[in-house]
Length: 189
Ligand SMILES: Cc1cc2nc3c(=O)[nH]c(=O)nc-3n(C[C@H](O)[C@H](O)[C@H](O)COP(=O)(O)O)c2cc1C
Image (cartoon, rainbow, N blue to C red; front, side, top):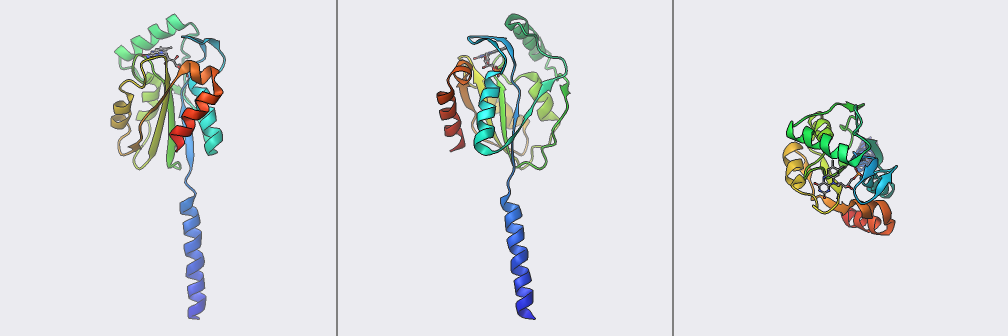
């Protein structure tokens, strides 16, 4: 009888270990298409290029944050809108949502806009509970690096273990797959 109980306990322990081992990850990304600095008119955003590589290498799904009101196609108009939103600390509405409760690791990607994360990413962050999550941020930029977003994310994602931001040039992410993969490999080490 004791042996049977022991066997049941062993099976139960094995099942719980296998559940515990199934850590889930997701890539949450915002990326703008249209006319952009240094890359011309693009149909897939620079940050999205990185997001897809991360998703492929980690087996994660992608959730794309899309603002309810699209940002303008034209680069000049887009930077104007983005500046106004930043000055106003706007939280533009986004289309749809993703429940992040079941994910342990979140790859969080965004372009640097005026030294910060785009305001629609604050909308997403502030709508979710980050407690206990591991967040691996990545961004693309055209010269300023990650700006102050390392600090910004840490304070906005309360209770999360936010790793260092991996920053890649947008033009590299867009046009140089080998270099983009190398950056992602470095980030996933
Ligand atoms: C509104 C706006 C603001 C930007 N601000 C910055 C900036 O402050 N520093 C920088 O290096 N690049 C800046 N850029 C360039 C983008 O960060 C870069 O092109 C990025 O790769 C775009 O990624 P995406 O194609 O995923 O949207 C800006 C671009 C836009 C459209």
